[in-house]
Amino acid sequence: MNRYLLLISLLFSVINLVQADAGVHVEVTNGNKMLETINKDIVNINTQQLKEILDKDPYTVLIDVRTRDEIVQLGAIRRGQNHNIVRGWLEFQIGEHAVNYDTPIIVYCGLNLRSPLATKTLMNMGYINVKNYSDGYFKWKEAGLSITVSDKALKSALYSLPIKVDEGVYSAIGATQPATYENGNHNNNLSFIVTTDGVLVFNAGGSYLLAKALHDEIKKVTNQSVKHVVFENAQGHAILGAPYWKEQGANIIAHKLTLETIVKKGDEIYQRAERRLRDKIVGSAAIKPDQIFDDGLSITMGNTVIELMHLGASHSPDDVQLWLPAQKLLISGDSAFNERLLPILGHTDTQGWIETWDKIEALEPNIIIPGHGAPTDLATVTKFTKDYLVYMRSEIEKVLDKDGGLNEAYAIDQTRYHDWGTYNELYRQNASRMLKQMEFE
Image (cartoon, rainbow, N blue to C red):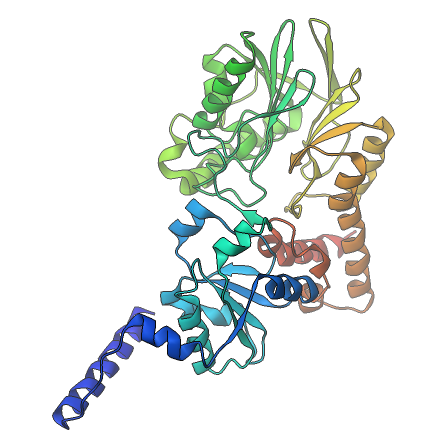
């Protein structure tokens, strides 16, 4: 790709030399004059028009031409159609998102300085349905419309600080986006329960630094020591902070299948996180739990009865849940999702997950802290979890009945979910993996 940029640069140099030799006078302009001229040639839309277009057409491609640093520090429009292509790479990367010449495209930046130029560039490339969002990102944010940020707690390693969910129950809600360097691997919920006889933490955190940051917040709530830490499963964001908790003298608890996975794949889990977190991985490790259980484990801490459960296969074979019967509060782990698209992993049993859901419903929880997304109720997590699984399995069955393959699976209409977090990263992967799994059911 650097060769293409070099060729373009050389071409302009040759043109300038030829013009100079021919005595051609090339008038120098400035950015403001260019914008004035270009704005006469492009279609500009305001905030209300952008919102209406995105609401009506999930296939519109929204391009943010700001830099990665700007987006990390200031946020971006939270819509499923949104993609980031830095302006300098627009010509080379737009084809990944807009395959056809008539694909509807809307371009934006922060203050409407770069986006008009980018819009004109796309028009010059042959795209005929391009618009410029002339209000810019800051006007969208000022209007109170949905945005996404990479770090809500800039002074903490946590993505966001813990909130009180119910009496004695707190949760630091992770980013509803993939784990990144910016969110520090805090893209799941880290919860804790304060009792009269110590604290229980659900999820060790995705790094030593995250675990310490969570403990710093726990200390603001109580002087009680952390006695137990529970792994929700064997994923990196659930286990890699365990060394910190061991230093505090906590008892690490996990399902027996979690232990098996750590023994077999602990190094791989760590290395995958290391590539993402780089310097933020310091002190982290995939260590074995101190205590394991199978179907369930009851823990009494002071006046609080805590039930750890393994209700069956779901997102992962070893997913566990925490139930507070007195409060009818469920910390579901990755058995329930909210606000984002759930991932289908290689070991995910989608049919078993639906069957496990019947057991979750039988608990009749008043409050659910899901594995990902804000605390909510049963109806909401059902929409984001069971209903999505049922719909996708039904659509995959139709593909298989017609002897279809991956192309047909990719073509399943998932646009109703396009505003959910992680949609762009997961919707094709989910269709592919469900097809491969259901072929052998």
